[in-house]
Image (cartoon, rainbow, N blue to C red; front, side):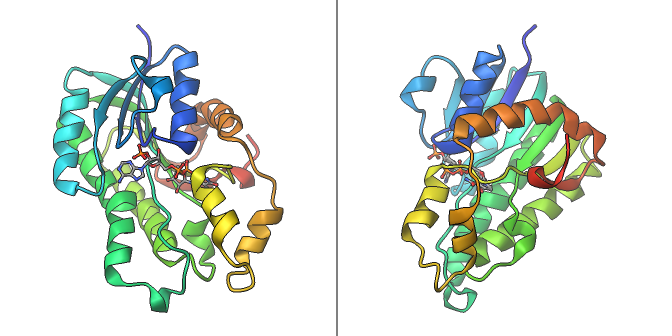
Length: 232
Ligand SMILES: NC(=O)c1ccc[n+]([C@@H]2O[C@H](COP(=O)([O-])OP(=O)(O)OC[C@H]3O[C@@H](n4cnc5c(N)ncnc54)[C@H](OP(=O)(O)O)[C@@H]3O)[C@@H](O)[C@H]2O)c1
């Protein structure tokens, strides 16, 4: 029987490329997202879900996965950046929105997966170097990815699956393009480094990640791994 993968956020960027990559490898793909891109129509099992509406997340996971018994991979990919600006100028409601999508929606998803008793081999949370860098302007996003790392470490003590928070490297997606095109690097110097750093296309990143996922099992479950800092 074909392996199955559950991915959050397939509307654009990395999640879309991962969905296409897994389809081409013969996986059954299950996804939650706000948008179903044309190129995935009739190729995946899809439930529309806005992860910011936390009260709808559990029921959406149940609807999508009610007949699924095993998942080779769960890829918690959906995420938002929020505005790049000083933490002092960032309002609580802005931080809350980033936290709801990047962290708390994932808690609800993991709870639903446990309650559904789905046998899962690996869970990969798409994290970021921002989880540890703490660069000026990355406030809500950095806090959310640091929190995601800890959330997944905590679940690694309770779920019978191997869990890794993975920083995927720089990928030319709408999220990164927004930063490169709109943020003043005099005000936020880390953006200058991003402009100069090598970047992958979403397809290159997807190919690399799909090859790396099985190898993540060599690391302790619950770890945060930056793909740029390991040799596998
Ligand atoms: N690009 C990079 O260089 C980079 C680096 C490190 C980490 N990351 C991480 O990689 C992941 C994917 O980001 P990306 O770069 O591919 O950016 P992106 O193109 O902006 O993709 C964001 C994804 O999240 C989904 N999403 C956003 N808000 C959502 C919501 N309210 N409900 C459901 N889904 C939602 C989107 O799908 P819908 O529009 O269909 O909802 C989309 O598929 C994120 O977790 C990001 O933090 C990216």
